[in-house]
Image (cartoon, rainbow, N blue to C red; front, side, top):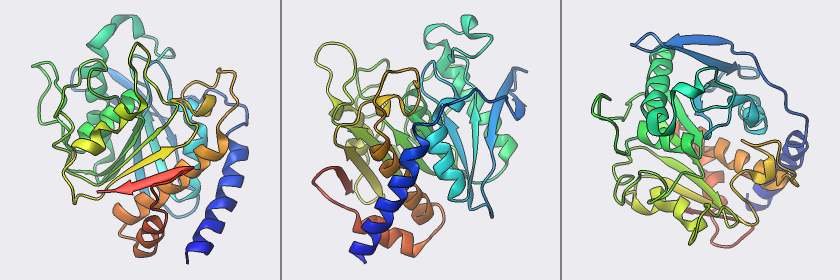
Length: 290
């Protein structure tokens, strides 16, 4: 089974690698939801190819936008997942960005995902990258500080699992030691050994803080990809980067995220067996579980 699984992964990675270098075009919003305050939130929607397996609510990175994550979206929709991605107020594409400077974007992001979750009305997968990964982990139970006007807990019981691509670590903004510890759902946490935060003393391992702080026995996975930076070389979040796109590694991350979702959000036993078959403490894709 191990040889077959690795062969399947290689074929999938090769196919997805081609997707990662295609031109990326802006996408018009497909849906608008409103927060309790009446603020309109534009949502991009990509429907599952074929029968829908589940729904993903995806939160983009700071200053980015949903359409800049097309390689991940394509992998997920082809695997049977519909993707719903709000345009947050800190995005450079958002018309009201100037009114939400600094940490004012944090409570607004919480409002965005709560409004969208209420619209979806049922179980979903919480996913995100960077700042958006923080959102996905909070929906899964992590307890990051919020202004007093934001209702807590941030945990949404409709969030079945959390997918967190390169979440911020302690000291990166407003996260304190122990904030990730209450994580209450299975989680898939990804980083790379070139994913070094800006500033003196930055360490890529800081992105693994949610994995390190989560209690053992809760089906939390950490994926560390050799040679991968915060943006997969411009494959996600910042397609304007000169690259080269780390397409093969991005395809591996997408493939493993699909196995994780099928296993823990869908109860797929063969997917779980295949995911566990990929566990390894050596590169190029180090996958561990606790």
